[in-house]
Length: 198
Length: 198
Ligand SMILES: [Zn+2]
Ligand SMILES: [Zn+2]
Image (cartoon, rainbow over the protein chains, first blue to last red):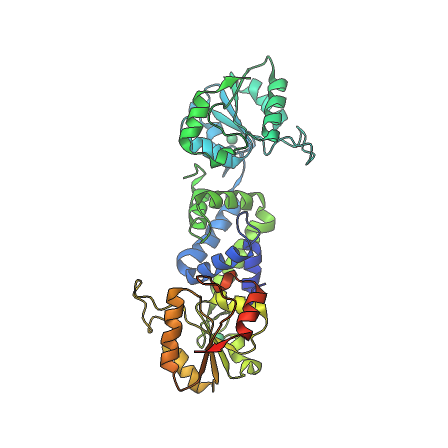
């Protein structure tokens, strides 16, 4: 509740639903937007509508893209036999920023979780197993968060792929309990270079 | 840089300009919006456009409103002779949430600042002096932040109004260096009740 006009109140409530923004920072953000109506608020609303209309999940890997299949999946240059498995798109972006991985990705859409009742079929694990064969993958690199659920998921995938393909995981540099998207590019590069067989 | 498609990259850059959001939280917010396209992203874009079209500053007090003059300025009930002076609209909202002040407001739009070269004419101080006469104000309550610039501004306004009207300020409960918009409703209520003459 901010005692603002109804339209502004509604906007504040929606902004407060974004991760990282509470009611107070949502109010500050909306006042900032109102002050910068022409320069920021109108362009932001238009950019949001453009993205809402065009953004979708790549049918092959789960990356966010503007077509049915993302540019990484369609690029022949990225077909080097390496497939990097990440939990979500933010992690894929973090890997791309480090600029050291030249293969393709597979976005699981989360981790296995007994607590939240997330099983293999809730994730993109069956599709991952298909891709290993259909895309001639020689190495699956598990770049999952160093959390309990992330590591459980890594071991489950390694078991499923056992004998079919070389399965490695990011090793050195990922701190215990750490999340990939928080790491600097150097740490990600080091972890990728020092990857080990599972 | 997130290596997202161009449209998404543009949206992330705009989101990162909002106060309280850095590049990382902007990326997280945009991924969340893409996941909740129908439920959150489209409605948010529409709410932003609605506010961008309708929101404006009240010509009388500087409050954000959807008309030329805000509902507080047009309400006869609020014409009780008390005028509460705040730095910005977020502070007005904070005062209204405490639900204890029944008069009208005057939003300065900042504080006097030698460092940022903000003088009385950059703020709504001339208009404040007009209103004291034209609206028959009997008490001006200065509800400015307990910062150096806030207190300098309070003393400047008290000098300008000296002899014309009773000038008080929020007293008890505002912590040194504290900002009004961070306080809970009870603290604001206590500070208002214990206001003292300057
Ligand atoms: Zn793809
Ligand atoms: Zn007004």
